[in-house]
Length: 477
Image (cartoon, rainbow, N blue to C red):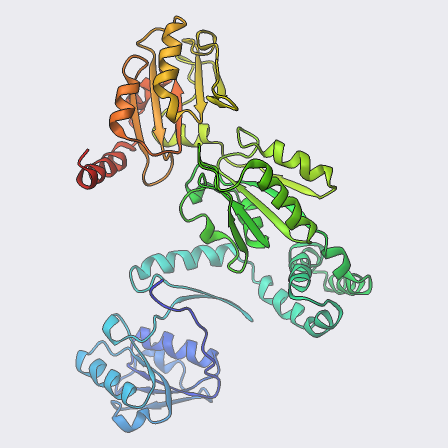
């Protein structure tokens, strides 16, 4: 983050805007809407600037600014598009202790002017740190379309209950939960539906019943984070990540996932790497139960889908036995996400009419699967947790009679920017994977659908080749 996002209180304070352009008009408009006293300067202001003439807090000067105009100035905007004026404005603003912002001149900016979505009193500011303002404007348009105007009125409506809620419900955690349940529960639904009287009744009833006691009960949320790309999270998963008190995560979640968790939530790494566990499964489950028993909302964040080789069922057995409420949020499983990202369909009428998911790893190491039954020409086999055993899996399959020419692919870090795909046959895949030095997490796909990767022409190779060249340069592969 290159800039600290803040909101300034400029009500009643002096703001200088130099210029008669459209940009100057937008600066004037924002400053006036925030309650500032605006002094604008330009000998020939454009029509959009003149539209604000007559406003009680706007004083326009039909001339260029001079240094004395910046006395007691809080913020100074340069929007003249004249280099000499921009330079003078910045020097004079700094001399008088004002914050300066000159349009499209980053070296003259103490702050970035964001794109704003306003649902008074709710304000959303979007910035790219000056790197790509057009992206911010596009996002603003999308947020404008997604966010009903009623949300501003909802914020204003709920503000009238702050003192009563603070008096009735003690403790920051309980109070936050009460607010969240109001906004996202029946109260918010009633208000947004236009029934303010019902919303008021629901709030009063909750407060009369001592809502704090109901909110002290802990919960466990088992959430699938998908195969790695944060864009593949479900909306429900994202919502719960924003509401959890504590998050237990492991190495299978993709980069950037934890950035989406509520800022003040506790984060606990529970490991889960083959042969290297920060916590055992039993210790992780015991910790989940302990935290939930303390009244916390515990989010167990798992890569892929928690019920497909994620041991989610095992964790929840003990949690449910303690009478703790649980919610399961499915995620895109690695097979679906990685297959699509690598350009390998798991089913195809000409190749595979069935797909089977298996895990390579059991309690005692490599599992003795019947590969002759699994690796048929009309079926795709997806192997989870098999990177360490690729060569052994291929050897076992060939020993059981599967043809050495059977296509196989190993997808490393699927869906992520570091994705790499190694394609071969049972006969040569072990050597190829060893040479590639894949780090994992990885998924193995066996079947003739692997040959569709080239046929479909999905644009995944450029990304993988770029990453491979990076590794070659770094490690001398």
